[in-house]
Amino acid sequence: MTSSPHFDDHYDVLETRPQEVRERDLFRRLADQIDHARTNSPYFGRILADVAGRDVPDRGALARLPVTRKSDLIVLQKATLPFAGMTGVPLGKLGRVFASPGPIYDPQGDRPDPWRFGRALYAAGFRTGSLVHNTFAYHFTPAGFMMDLAARAIGCPVFPAGTGQSELQAQTIADLRPAYYAGTPSFLRILLEKADEMQVDISSIRRAAVSGEAFLPPVRQLLADRGIAGFQSYGTADLGMVAYETEAREGLVLDEEVIVEIVRPGTGDPVPEGEVGEVVVTVLAPDYPLIRFATGDLSALLPGASPCGRTNMRIRGWMGRADQTTKVKGMFVHPSQVADVVKRHPEILKARLAVTHDADRNDVMTLACETATDASDGLGSAVATSLRDVCKLRGEVRFVAAGSLPNDGKVIEDGRRYD
Image (spheres, helix red, strand yellow):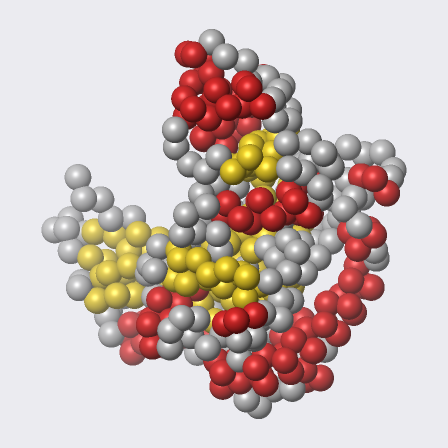
């Protein structure tokens, strides 16, 4: 869509404000959130003890704050149940509590559309008054309520179908004639196939808000062939909605309530625009004030604004997992260790550790390092020493030209074969 935007095309005026205005507002609100979190959240009060909100006026200052990793939540929460002291309000001020696999306990704020998926549904074409058939789970995990509360926020009634029972769901759709579907794309495909098998008509569904898994091109095309426009959104049970697809079909536009950074996996260091890295999110939610929360997901920032008229930054969408920890000769090697080696040698611009087998099936590590100029004679041995000191394993080092390593976010590549 390349025509000039109309107000009705957007959820609210926030979506079309100048980016510099958005940045000022986000960091003004972040300053308030940091001060709130330090006072009301024992966890953030501890890790941000020496930081005041006024100390974080921009992205450069934000990048110096510590990262909290999703992969650490299980341990952190077990030490301090139920939320590791991260919430910014008492338990009685929350709306609901959920459990994700792990278990990880997820609080829901007691506000309208607390997960902020209303913006994604509106961009997908959901409008007031039409029924939403919601197939996300309402049991234990928050996904069902994420879409349910969002639909109610924009004035749509909801049929809480939940998961499974495809035959009963197909019949219900045929009876109630909902215009909209919310759920995974693969389950919508299953429902279409089940309806064909049962010879019932579920063609009332014209729009689908899908999430929870990759929206693969074959499934996207299958839906389009059936007259269903599918739109993907990206979020987590911790953060709520992070980014969403629009009619432009060019990446995912960021939510107005989050600050997103793309960092080198294993670190908190932002990468240049366009480079693949780990998604780190700060969400401006006083009840669960997650600051620099590392999701473990890979993505990249896209340049410029969306043709749909929304002016916020965009990401390419989910591109895999950032946690590339692997075991070499019985010892774990982490992306953060590769980052530590690189930090010891400023000549290195970027590095990638490849783990392979030699002819005798022994593990072999090779660190490929990008350098701007030819490496000095002693740099290779110095880097090899650092690799051994940090990882407690010996590895080879080779130097490559700047820009020659793949832009896929991988810091550790496990090329071993076990067949």
